[in-house]
Image 1 (cartoon, rainbow, N blue to C red):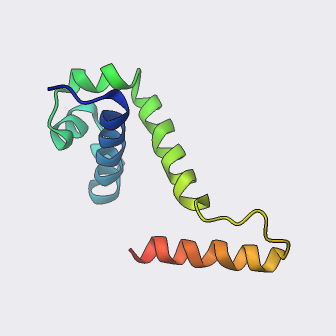
Image 2 (image 1 turned 180 degrees about the vertical axis):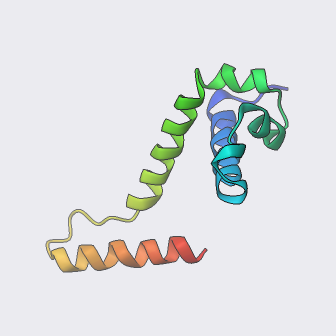
Length: 94
């Protein structure tokens, strides 16, 4: 059974991040990502046009994680900055 594209894209990005973090950028290949996800290398390109598109999705995911708990409506800039850094510390320590 095929998974919806959004779910499969998330799995591909998660696998790509794990590979880069655990094994280094030289292991960032369609084959290694496919092996990690449990699909064929060709199936990767049903969900992403290119490897560069996967890199773009990784960057978007990192940006989301970095700015997830920003409190834009807090009038105190120091409080916003503190919230930002506490969130980053939590993210890094997980």
